[in-house]
Image (tube, rainbow, N blue to C red):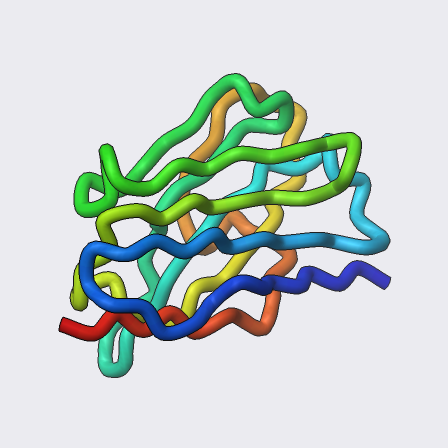
Length: 126
């Protein structure tokens, strides 16, 4: 049974940094595109970033470009999201998700992702 487990969230002041991690026991990790999504109260879930199966291709939401970096370590079956220069508007529940595909590249279309974690809360104070 596939599980997706996020960690690393917390409370940080504006301008600070956090590093999120995601592991997926039971998942054939390098068969899956991996993505980070977030959902703030009263808002729809939105794509933050994704990384291709090999790690060579990444995409970012305009709101996080230049501040967030996604990476993956296929040998460790782990996905990361380094978040720098955090802003109060980054406050949300952050979710890791997996999308099985044979294609290269990646996308942050929510509906394409098959496996989701329970989320980790990120709160940025002003």
